[in-house]
Structure formats: C-alpha cells, structure tokens
Length: 403
Image 1 (tube, rainbow, N blue to C red):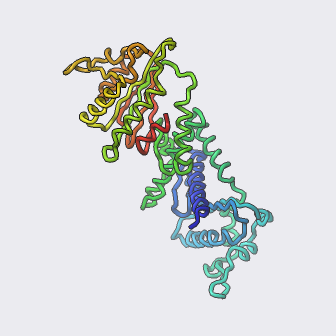
Image 2 (tube, rainbow, N blue to C red):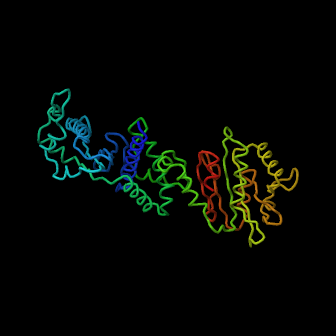
Image 3 (cartoon, helix red, strand yellow):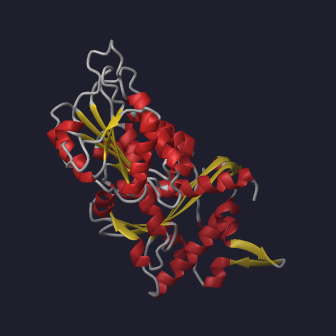
C-alpha cells in the first residue's frame, strides 16, 4: 500500500469513528444507544426503532452506483431475513462523501432504478438479479425502499470533525481546546475500544454511558488521536495551551513527571530539570517577585535521585529539597523559602508525593500543578483553587517538548 493510499485509508477510519461519535451525541434520549459494527458500521437504536448505517468516504472518487451496490445488496438480504422473522426489522442508511457524481441520484430511487443499478450484476459472465435470487416481489422491494435512505452528499472529513467538536463544546462547555483534547480524544479512544469487542452486546453504548465515560479532565495519550494530529502538532498544541505565557506570573508551579525505569537515562532527566529552571524561574535582581519551580519525579529510586542531586551540586546548580541537615525530616517551610538572585536557588526538588501534598496545602499564593504521567495518574489533588493539569505522555522527552 502506498503512503498516499495508507493516508486515505486512515482518514476513512477516522471519518467512520467521527460519524459514530456524532451519532451518539445527536441521540434524542440519554437511554438511546449506538452499536458499533453490528449489522452495519453503526446501528442507532432508539426506543422505537433501529437504523443500520454504512459509511463510505471517497473524497477523491466520483460517485457511481457500483460503489454502494454491495452495501444495498447486503441490506436487502438482511431485509429478506427480517420478513421471515430470522432477523429484526430495521431501517437502513448509507452515508457517503464523494468528489463528484452526486447528481446521479437526484432523480430518486424507484423499484425499477433499484433493480437496474443496484440489484443486477454479472458473475462469471452470467447476469444475476439479487431480488430474484432472494424471491422478493415488487411490493416487498417498495417496502425495502421505504426503509432505505441514501445520502451521497454527506459532510467532508474536516466539516464533520468540526461538527463533532462544536457538539462536544455545546454539551460540556469550555473551550474548543478542551472539546478536542479532553472529550474528543476520550471519545475516539472509547469508540476504538468498542469496535474491537468480540460480542455485539459489548459494542453497544447509551448516550448517557458515553458522556459519562468521556467526561475527564486528563489529556490522554491516545495513539489514534495523536496519529490524527501528528505527534509534533499534538505536543505543540499542548505547549500553546499551557506553557506559552509571554509574561510569566510569579505563581508556585509544581511539575510532576514520571520516568520509565526501563528506558530511563539520567542525562535526560537532568536536561529536563535544567529546562524547567531556565524557563520557569525568574531570579534576576530586577525581578520584583523572584521565583522558581518545584519538581517531583515519579518512579525514580531514592539512590538514583540522590545521584542526580550529586551531579547537580557538582555543577553548582543550586536546589533545595526541604531537608535542612543530615537525617532531618522534610520541612515544608524550608522548601517554601523564596528563591532569589542572592540565594541562587534555581529549582526545588520534592522527594515524595506526601512532600508534594504538604507543600501545596501550605502555600497561599496561586498554585499550578502540571502532572505528566506515562500510564494512570499517580497524584490526585481536588481543590478548586488549584489548577491541576494532567497530561499523559509517551516518554520523558515529551515533557521537554511541551514545556
């Protein structure tokens, strides 16, 4: 498969995922549900009926009847089984986006049109008529057409995506960023999770369940979401949202980062410490309220953290960690001392999550917590007066790209 073909295929997957998300968000009742890849790509179940929807995205292809012929034949086969009682009665929908040719359906579809363009085909040079093979009468085909809706002017890729984001923002409020990076990101992951479940019953979700599951304030590293954005663009958007203040206010900023012990390299963590200090400390003599950031490293051993501190000291990079002398307990008042040009404190290192919580609780100034986690969140702090940003990352170097 060529690179271009692969991109088109992936866009087709995203188009279907987005339609699934939009279908759920547009359900009238909280108890209505959507089933992913059951009868068709998407089955929309309300209190009164079920609509099986197949989705086609051919942005570079002209519409021809042959493109949806197999889908119509499959739906007609299901319709026949519903007449005999072996399958449930449902409505059928085909949505497609094409580059041109939509006018070929402007005249509508009657029984003769259905037979000629969708149900007649050749196999091994022999002409077949699907409706005759199924034993369906014209009256039954009329009933099928009443249950079938074909839309060949469905929204394009970006237009549908914007509608999803706008709908999420209307439901949850907040900014377009939160609609995309929190709710859409989580919705995409949830739809993907549902689509690979083995049992049809496990691929069904109500609107109420869906909204509850995607309502989170953590930016998750969903590989599908990142693939759609591109990793560089994903990290840049996070930097723009949280870390591009031109005039940095003297807030108390806590950076909580997680390391993977398997891939950990001390120099990477040291570079991050230096980067945090360079950007988020203001210590010049002209600074009216000097300050520096705090850092906590999750997953690092005590011995490795000690080795890092020794290296920082050897390089005359001054820090404090709340322990004033050998054997002393942690003292939050000690680590809260103001960093200044005179004392040269460039960063404050917190050794444990307990130290983090004690210090955050004791500060009365404006506080910001930025938690970067590889897997699940490892620190919960529920205080409406403290902004707590939770961002899942793939590797430690992502933090440096974001901040």
